[in-house]
Image (cartoon, rainbow, N blue to C red; front, side):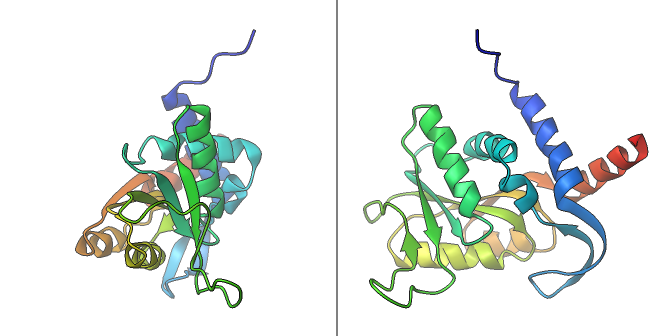
Length: 196
């Protein structure tokens, strides 16, 4: 007999614990945006582990628009996320493909910006992101997708650092949905630290 799947709330709590333990650091850091911060979140230790990928796929899929035919994101942070969500969708018997948006056009062959099974022009795509600070990476992905003829209105991120990204995305007519805010991850990290 197969074990019952954990509840959505249990998955969400476990994912927050994993992010707090494995992805969050406190100290002095320079972010991809060039900003200085006392908080650093690198989701890859979670998103590149099998169990973390499973949790993320389920959590992110919940916020993909019902009429989206693809999830997409800028390489490298979004690569495992789009794959995890496409797999979680397949397991839920939903057709949802994954696209990877290159940071620059491929230098040979087709000179493509996008990798994966391309949907028809006009199709809705939800963009996935690991961490949003200023929104720059998400906006770059959205720009390429929109220029290719796709409809993009939502970005789903694991962590919103709450440093202007939501405002920048809203200005580009994008809704930002985040699984967690930075303060939630930092607070959980403090709680876990005091428990040990």
